[in-house]
Image 1: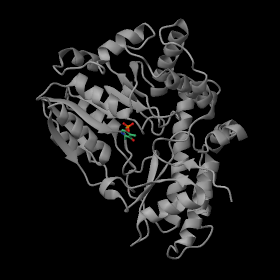
Image 2: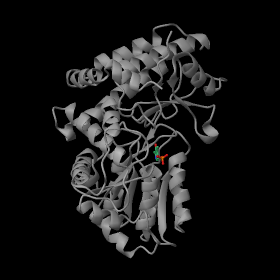
Image 3: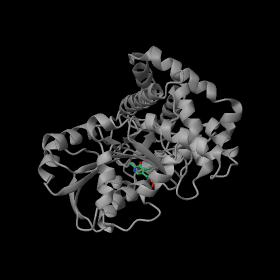
Image 4: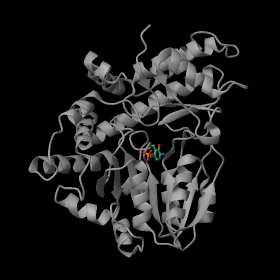
Length: 415
Ligand SMILES: *Cc1c(COP(=O)(O)O)cnc(C)c1O
Protein backbone atom coordinates (compact mmCIF):
# COMPACT_ATOMS: atom_id res chain seq x y z
CA UNK A 1 0.00 0.00 0.00
CA UNK A 2 1.10 3.59 -0.40
CA UNK A 3 2.23 5.26 2.77
CA UNK A 4 0.96 8.79 3.21
CA UNK A 5 3.06 10.64 5.73
CA UNK A 6 1.07 12.06 8.60
CA UNK A 7 2.45 13.89 11.58
CA UNK A 8 0.94 13.01 14.94
CA UNK A 9 3.63 14.95 16.78
CA UNK A 10 3.15 17.71 19.39
CA UNK A 11 4.95 20.20 17.17
CA UNK A 12 5.46 20.51 14.35
CA UNK A 13 1.85 19.63 13.65
CA UNK A 14 0.18 18.98 10.25
CA UNK A 15 0.16 22.05 8.01
CA UNK A 16 -3.01 23.76 6.88
CA UNK A 17 -2.99 23.76 3.04
CA UNK A 18 -4.50 27.25 2.84
CA UNK A 19 -1.67 28.53 5.04
CA UNK A 20 0.93 26.90 2.82
CA UNK A 21 -0.51 28.63 -0.23
CA UNK A 22 -0.52 31.96 1.61
CA UNK A 23 3.16 31.46 2.47
CA UNK A 24 4.08 30.76 -1.10
CA UNK A 25 2.30 33.92 -2.24
CA UNK A 26 3.81 36.23 0.41
CA UNK A 27 6.24 38.10 -1.81
CA UNK A 28 5.97 41.44 -0.05
CA UNK A 29 8.36 43.90 1.57
CA UNK A 30 7.94 44.52 5.27
CA UNK A 31 8.09 48.32 5.12
CA UNK A 32 5.05 48.71 2.89
CA UNK A 33 1.37 49.43 3.43
CA UNK A 34 0.60 45.94 2.16
CA UNK A 35 2.60 44.37 4.97
CA UNK A 36 1.30 46.80 7.59
CA UNK A 37 -2.27 45.86 6.70
CA UNK A 38 -1.45 42.18 7.01
CA UNK A 39 0.46 42.62 10.27
CA UNK A 40 -2.24 44.72 11.90
CA UNK A 41 -4.89 42.19 10.99
CA UNK A 42 -2.85 39.22 12.21
CA UNK A 43 -2.03 40.93 15.53
CA UNK A 44 -5.69 41.84 16.06
CA UNK A 45 -6.83 38.32 15.17
CA UNK A 46 -4.20 36.83 17.46
CA UNK A 47 -5.73 38.74 20.37
CA UNK A 48 -9.04 37.09 19.62
CA UNK A 49 -7.40 33.71 19.21
CA UNK A 50 -5.60 34.06 22.54
CA UNK A 51 -8.81 35.47 24.04
CA UNK A 52 -7.40 38.65 25.57
CA UNK A 53 -7.63 42.42 25.47
CA UNK A 54 -3.88 42.63 26.14
CA UNK A 55 -1.30 43.39 23.48
CA UNK A 56 -0.10 40.37 21.56
CA UNK A 57 3.35 40.48 19.98
CA UNK A 58 4.94 38.28 17.36
CA UNK A 59 8.59 37.25 17.40
CA UNK A 60 10.66 35.60 14.69
CA UNK A 61 11.84 32.69 16.81
CA UNK A 62 10.72 29.30 17.99
CA UNK A 63 8.54 29.15 21.10
CA UNK A 64 11.55 29.15 23.39
CA UNK A 65 12.42 32.65 22.12
CA UNK A 66 9.24 34.01 23.69
CA UNK A 67 10.02 32.11 26.89
CA UNK A 68 13.47 33.72 26.93
CA UNK A 69 12.00 37.13 26.13
CA UNK A 70 9.66 36.78 29.11
CA UNK A 71 12.47 36.02 31.54
CA UNK A 72 14.77 38.67 30.04
CA UNK A 73 12.14 41.42 30.13
CA UNK A 74 10.43 40.67 33.43
CA UNK A 75 13.21 39.74 35.81
CA UNK A 76 16.51 41.10 37.09
CA UNK A 77 19.52 39.10 38.26
CA UNK A 78 18.92 37.92 41.80
CA UNK A 79 15.12 38.02 41.53
CA UNK A 80 13.34 35.09 43.08
CA UNK A 81 11.19 33.19 40.59
CA UNK A 82 9.06 30.12 41.19
CA UNK A 83 9.12 27.43 38.51
CA UNK A 84 6.38 24.80 38.51
CA UNK A 85 7.79 21.83 36.68
CA UNK A 86 6.69 18.33 35.82
CA UNK A 87 8.65 17.61 32.66
CA UNK A 88 11.13 18.73 30.04
CA UNK A 89 9.44 22.04 29.25
CA UNK A 90 9.15 22.94 32.92
CA UNK A 91 12.85 22.23 33.20
CA UNK A 92 13.40 24.66 30.33
CA UNK A 93 11.95 27.42 32.52
CA UNK A 94 14.42 26.51 35.25
CA UNK A 95 17.35 26.60 32.83
CA UNK A 96 16.27 29.90 31.35
CA UNK A 97 15.70 31.62 34.69
CA UNK A 98 19.10 30.42 35.93
CA UNK A 99 20.75 31.64 32.74
CA UNK A 100 19.45 35.13 33.54
CA UNK A 101 20.73 34.95 37.10
CA UNK A 102 17.40 34.45 38.86
CA UNK A 103 17.21 32.85 42.27
CA UNK A 104 15.11 29.87 41.20
CA UNK A 105 12.75 28.07 43.53
CA UNK A 106 11.23 24.92 42.04
CA UNK A 107 8.04 23.02 42.79
CA UNK A 108 8.42 19.75 40.94
CA UNK A 109 6.44 16.56 40.79
CA UNK A 110 7.32 13.28 39.04
CA UNK A 111 6.80 13.08 35.29
CA UNK A 112 3.19 12.25 34.43
CA UNK A 113 1.76 14.17 37.37
CA UNK A 114 0.69 17.72 38.03
CA UNK A 115 1.56 19.72 41.17
CA UNK A 116 -1.00 20.16 43.90
CA UNK A 117 -2.00 23.73 44.56
CA UNK A 118 -1.13 23.59 48.26
CA UNK A 119 2.56 23.10 47.50
CA UNK A 120 2.39 26.07 45.13
CA UNK A 121 0.79 28.17 47.85
CA UNK A 122 3.52 27.18 50.31
CA UNK A 123 6.35 27.93 47.88
CA UNK A 124 5.13 31.46 47.11
CA UNK A 125 7.07 34.14 48.95
CA UNK A 126 6.34 37.80 49.30
CA UNK A 127 9.42 38.53 47.20
CA UNK A 128 8.57 36.06 44.40
CA UNK A 129 8.77 38.12 41.23
CA UNK A 130 7.34 35.63 38.78
CA UNK A 131 5.75 32.20 38.59
CA UNK A 132 6.71 30.28 35.46
CA UNK A 133 4.66 27.30 34.32
CA UNK A 134 3.23 25.37 31.36
CA UNK A 135 -0.46 25.09 30.54
CA UNK A 136 0.21 21.63 29.13
CA UNK A 137 3.50 19.75 29.52
CA UNK A 138 4.15 18.25 26.10
CA UNK A 139 6.80 15.81 27.31
CA UNK A 140 4.37 13.95 29.58
CA UNK A 141 0.89 14.77 28.25
CA UNK A 142 -0.25 16.40 31.49
CA UNK A 143 -2.52 19.42 31.88
CA UNK A 144 -1.67 21.89 34.62
CA UNK A 145 -4.19 23.95 36.54
CA UNK A 146 -3.41 27.49 35.36
CA UNK A 147 -6.70 28.82 36.74
CA UNK A 148 -5.88 27.29 40.12
CA UNK A 149 -2.43 28.84 40.28
CA UNK A 150 -3.84 32.23 39.23
CA UNK A 151 -6.49 31.93 41.95
CA UNK A 152 -3.83 31.29 44.60
CA UNK A 153 -1.92 34.39 43.53
CA UNK A 154 -5.09 36.44 43.87
CA UNK A 155 -6.17 34.88 47.16
CA UNK A 156 -2.80 35.42 48.79
CA UNK A 157 -2.50 38.92 47.34
CA UNK A 158 0.88 37.92 45.92
CA UNK A 159 2.25 40.35 43.35
CA UNK A 160 4.22 37.76 41.38
CA UNK A 161 3.68 37.83 37.64
CA UNK A 162 2.14 34.67 36.22
CA UNK A 163 3.94 33.62 33.05
CA UNK A 164 2.39 30.70 31.18
CA UNK A 165 3.92 28.68 28.38
CA UNK A 166 0.73 27.91 26.48
CA UNK A 167 2.64 26.74 23.44
CA UNK A 168 0.68 23.48 23.30
CA UNK A 169 -2.08 24.75 25.60
CA UNK A 170 -3.43 27.44 23.28
CA UNK A 171 -6.01 25.90 20.96
CA UNK A 172 -6.27 22.70 23.02
CA UNK A 173 -7.43 23.87 26.42
CA UNK A 174 -9.63 26.71 27.64
CA UNK A 175 -7.50 29.59 28.92
CA UNK A 176 -8.99 32.85 30.22
CA UNK A 177 -5.95 35.11 30.39
CA UNK A 178 -7.76 38.30 31.43
CA UNK A 179 -10.34 36.64 33.69
CA UNK A 180 -7.78 34.61 35.59
CA UNK A 181 -5.08 37.27 35.65
CA UNK A 182 -2.34 35.64 33.59
CA UNK A 183 0.42 38.18 32.84
CA UNK A 184 2.17 36.55 29.91
CA UNK A 185 0.72 33.82 27.72
CA UNK A 186 3.00 32.31 25.10
CA UNK A 187 2.20 30.45 21.88
CA UNK A 188 4.16 28.97 18.99
CA UNK A 189 3.43 28.70 15.27
CA UNK A 190 4.13 24.98 14.86
CA UNK A 191 1.36 23.94 17.24
CA UNK A 192 -2.39 24.69 17.17
CA UNK A 193 -2.20 27.34 14.44
CA UNK A 194 -1.16 24.69 11.92
CA UNK A 195 1.77 26.49 10.28
CA UNK A 196 5.52 25.72 10.18
CA UNK A 197 7.92 26.46 13.05
CA UNK A 198 9.53 29.89 13.26
CA UNK A 199 7.08 32.25 14.96
CA UNK A 200 6.38 32.77 18.63
CA UNK A 201 3.62 34.98 19.97
CA UNK A 202 2.91 36.27 23.41
CA UNK A 203 0.19 38.27 25.11
CA UNK A 204 1.41 40.71 27.75
CA UNK A 205 -0.60 42.26 30.59
CA UNK A 206 -0.36 45.87 31.78
CA UNK A 207 1.35 44.68 34.96
CA UNK A 208 3.97 42.88 32.90
CA UNK A 209 4.60 46.01 30.80
CA UNK A 210 5.22 47.93 34.01
CA UNK A 211 7.62 45.27 35.29
CA UNK A 212 9.68 45.59 32.11
CA UNK A 213 10.54 49.16 32.94
CA UNK A 214 12.40 48.15 36.09
CA UNK A 215 14.12 45.03 34.78
CA UNK A 216 17.91 45.34 34.85
CA UNK A 217 18.56 42.61 32.29
CA UNK A 218 20.23 43.57 29.02
CA UNK A 219 17.84 43.16 26.07
CA UNK A 220 18.19 43.88 22.39
CA UNK A 221 16.54 41.61 19.80
CA UNK A 222 14.01 40.45 22.37
CA UNK A 223 13.28 43.88 23.83
CA UNK A 224 9.49 43.61 23.96
CA UNK A 225 9.05 47.36 24.57
CA UNK A 226 10.63 48.04 21.18
CA UNK A 227 8.45 45.40 19.50
CA UNK A 228 5.35 46.96 21.04
CA UNK A 229 6.22 50.44 19.75
CA UNK A 230 6.74 49.11 16.26
CA UNK A 231 3.65 46.92 16.36
CA UNK A 232 1.57 50.02 17.10
CA UNK A 233 2.72 51.31 13.69
CA UNK A 234 1.93 48.00 11.99
CA UNK A 235 5.57 46.97 11.78
CA UNK A 236 8.10 44.83 13.57
CA UNK A 237 11.42 46.09 14.93
CA UNK A 238 13.50 43.89 12.61
CA UNK A 239 12.77 41.95 9.44
CA UNK A 240 9.73 39.83 10.30
CA UNK A 241 9.09 36.28 9.12
CA UNK A 242 6.79 37.65 6.42
CA UNK A 243 5.80 34.32 4.88
CA UNK A 244 4.93 32.81 8.25
CA UNK A 245 2.88 35.85 9.17
CA UNK A 246 0.90 35.48 5.95
CA UNK A 247 0.42 31.80 6.80
CA UNK A 248 -0.75 32.69 10.28
CA UNK A 249 -3.29 35.11 8.84
CA UNK A 250 -4.68 32.36 6.62
CA UNK A 251 -4.77 29.89 9.52
CA UNK A 252 -6.68 32.28 11.76
CA UNK A 253 -9.12 32.90 8.89
CA UNK A 254 -9.58 29.14 8.62
CA UNK A 255 -10.23 28.78 12.34
CA UNK A 256 -12.79 31.59 12.15
CA UNK A 257 -14.28 30.03 9.02
CA UNK A 258 -15.01 26.84 10.97
CA UNK A 259 -17.42 28.89 13.08
CA UNK A 260 -19.08 31.03 10.44
CA UNK A 261 -16.44 33.76 10.67
CA UNK A 262 -16.45 34.03 14.47
CA UNK A 263 -12.80 33.57 15.49
CA UNK A 264 -13.48 33.34 19.24
CA UNK A 265 -16.04 30.61 18.62
CA UNK A 266 -13.68 28.94 16.15
CA UNK A 267 -11.00 28.83 18.84
CA UNK A 268 -13.47 27.20 21.26
CA UNK A 269 -14.37 24.64 18.60
CA UNK A 270 -10.69 23.94 17.98
CA UNK A 271 -10.29 23.23 21.69
CA UNK A 272 -13.39 20.99 21.67
CA UNK A 273 -12.02 19.21 18.63
CA UNK A 274 -8.75 18.43 20.42
CA UNK A 275 -10.66 17.31 23.51
CA UNK A 276 -12.69 14.87 21.41
CA UNK A 277 -9.66 13.47 19.56
CA UNK A 278 -7.89 13.06 22.91
CA UNK A 279 -10.86 11.36 24.58
CA UNK A 280 -11.19 8.93 21.66
CA UNK A 281 -7.47 8.15 21.83
CA UNK A 282 -7.46 7.63 25.60
CA UNK A 283 -10.38 5.23 25.38
CA UNK A 284 -8.74 3.38 22.50
CA UNK A 285 -5.35 2.81 24.11
CA UNK A 286 -6.93 1.75 27.39
CA UNK A 287 -9.11 -0.73 25.50
CA UNK A 288 -5.84 -2.17 24.16
CA UNK A 289 -4.77 -2.76 27.75
CA UNK A 290 -2.28 0.12 27.72
CA UNK A 291 -1.95 2.64 30.51
CA UNK A 292 -1.93 6.41 30.21
CA UNK A 293 1.24 8.12 31.41
CA UNK A 294 -0.75 11.07 32.84
CA UNK A 295 -4.06 9.50 33.87
CA UNK A 296 -5.05 12.05 36.51
CA UNK A 297 -4.86 15.24 34.45
CA UNK A 298 -4.51 14.28 30.80
CA UNK A 299 -4.04 17.14 28.32
CA UNK A 300 -6.07 17.37 25.12
CA UNK A 301 -2.90 18.50 23.36
CA UNK A 302 -1.47 15.01 23.28
CA UNK A 303 -1.85 11.57 24.80
CA UNK A 304 1.19 9.91 26.35
CA UNK A 305 0.89 6.13 26.51
CA UNK A 306 2.92 3.44 28.26
CA UNK A 307 3.84 0.42 26.11
CA UNK A 308 2.95 -3.10 27.25
CA UNK A 309 5.04 -4.35 30.18
CA UNK A 310 8.59 -5.13 29.08
CA UNK A 311 8.27 -3.55 25.60
CA UNK A 312 10.32 -0.57 24.40
CA UNK A 313 7.96 2.19 23.23
CA UNK A 314 10.40 2.85 20.38
CA UNK A 315 9.19 -0.38 18.80
CA UNK A 316 5.65 1.01 18.53
CA UNK A 317 6.95 4.34 17.20
CA UNK A 318 9.04 2.53 14.60
CA UNK A 319 6.26 0.20 13.53
CA UNK A 320 3.77 3.05 13.06
CA UNK A 321 6.38 4.93 11.02
CA UNK A 322 7.62 2.10 8.84
CA UNK A 323 4.25 0.51 8.07
CA UNK A 324 1.91 3.49 7.99
CA UNK A 325 4.18 6.58 7.77
CA UNK A 326 2.44 7.80 10.91
CA UNK A 327 4.90 9.89 12.87
CA UNK A 328 4.40 9.70 16.61
CA UNK A 329 7.03 10.63 19.18
CA UNK A 330 8.85 8.54 21.72
CA UNK A 331 9.52 9.84 25.22
CA UNK A 332 11.96 12.75 25.61
CA UNK A 333 15.25 12.37 27.48
CA UNK A 334 15.11 9.68 30.15
CA UNK A 335 11.51 8.89 29.12
CA UNK A 336 12.80 7.53 25.79
CA UNK A 337 11.67 3.94 25.33
CA UNK A 338 9.16 4.29 28.15
CA UNK A 339 6.22 6.03 26.48
CA UNK A 340 4.93 7.20 23.11
CA UNK A 341 2.98 10.38 22.38
CA UNK A 342 0.12 10.99 19.96
CA UNK A 343 -0.79 14.64 19.36
CA UNK A 344 -4.23 16.19 18.84
CA UNK A 345 -3.09 19.79 18.36
CA UNK A 346 -4.53 21.75 15.45
CA UNK A 347 -5.52 20.09 12.20
CA UNK A 348 -6.64 16.66 13.40
CA UNK A 349 -10.16 15.44 12.93
CA UNK A 350 -12.29 12.35 13.45
CA UNK A 351 -10.89 10.67 10.32
CA UNK A 352 -7.26 11.20 11.35
CA UNK A 353 -7.97 9.95 14.84
CA UNK A 354 -9.78 6.81 13.72
CA UNK A 355 -7.04 6.10 11.18
CA UNK A 356 -4.36 6.40 13.86
CA UNK A 357 -6.28 4.07 16.15
CA UNK A 358 -6.79 1.57 13.32
CA UNK A 359 -3.05 1.62 12.61
CA UNK A 360 -2.35 1.17 16.30
CA UNK A 361 -4.49 -1.98 16.24
CA UNK A 362 -2.37 -3.33 13.38
CA UNK A 363 0.76 -2.59 15.40
CA UNK A 364 -0.76 -4.21 18.50
CA UNK A 365 -1.49 -7.31 16.43
CA UNK A 366 2.00 -7.46 14.90
CA UNK A 367 3.72 -6.88 18.25
CA UNK A 368 1.38 -9.36 19.99
CA UNK A 369 -0.01 -7.14 22.71
CA UNK A 370 -1.38 -9.45 25.43
CA UNK A 371 -5.07 -10.29 24.90
CA UNK A 372 -5.28 -8.25 21.69
CA UNK A 373 -8.28 -8.56 19.41
CA UNK A 374 -9.13 -6.46 16.37
CA UNK A 375 -11.84 -3.92 17.06
CA UNK A 376 -11.06 -3.33 20.73
CA UNK A 377 -9.58 0.12 20.32
CA UNK A 378 -11.77 1.22 17.42
CA UNK A 379 -14.96 0.23 19.23
CA UNK A 380 -13.96 2.20 22.31
CA UNK A 381 -13.11 5.28 20.22
CA UNK A 382 -16.33 5.06 18.21
CA UNK A 383 -18.38 4.96 21.38
CA UNK A 384 -16.64 8.01 22.78
CA UNK A 385 -17.23 9.93 19.59
CA UNK A 386 -20.90 8.93 19.42
CA UNK A 387 -21.45 9.84 23.06
CA UNK A 388 -19.94 13.30 22.80
CA UNK A 389 -22.84 15.53 23.71
CA UNK A 390 -21.79 18.29 21.37
CA UNK A 391 -22.00 15.87 18.47
CA UNK A 392 -24.05 18.07 16.20
CA UNK A 393 -22.04 21.21 16.82
CA UNK A 394 -18.84 19.31 16.29
CA UNK A 395 -19.92 17.43 13.22
CA UNK A 396 -20.27 20.67 11.28
CA UNK A 397 -16.75 21.70 12.27
CA UNK A 398 -15.46 18.28 11.30
CA UNK A 399 -17.23 18.43 7.95
CA UNK A 400 -15.53 21.71 7.17
CA UNK A 401 -12.20 20.26 8.28
CA UNK A 402 -12.61 17.41 5.80
CA UNK A 403 -13.62 19.77 3.01
CA UNK A 404 -10.29 21.60 3.22
CA UNK A 405 -8.41 18.36 2.55
CA UNK A 406 -8.71 18.43 -1.24
CA UNK A 407 -6.49 15.97 -3.16
CA UNK A 408 -3.99 18.77 -3.90
CA UNK A 409 -3.97 19.72 -0.27
CA UNK A 410 -3.51 16.13 0.81
CA UNK A 411 -0.45 15.72 -1.39
CA UNK A 412 0.91 19.03 -0.14
CA UNK A 413 1.00 17.63 3.38
CA UNK A 414 2.66 14.41 2.25
CA UNK A 415 6.38 14.46 2.64
C1 LIG B 1 6.99 22.96 21.53
C2 LIG B 1 7.01 23.51 22.91
C3 LIG B 1 7.84 24.59 23.29
C4 LIG B 1 8.69 25.37 22.32
O1 LIG B 1 9.67 24.70 21.76
P1 LIG B 1 10.43 25.36 20.53
O2 LIG B 1 11.19 24.20 20.01
O3 LIG B 1 11.29 26.42 21.05
O4 LIG B 1 9.39 25.88 19.60
C5 LIG B 1 7.76 25.07 24.57
N1 LIG B 1 6.92 24.54 25.46
C6 LIG B 1 6.10 23.53 25.16
C7 LIG B 1 5.16 23.02 26.20
C8 LIG B 1 6.13 22.97 23.88
O5 LIG B 1 5.31 21.95 23.57
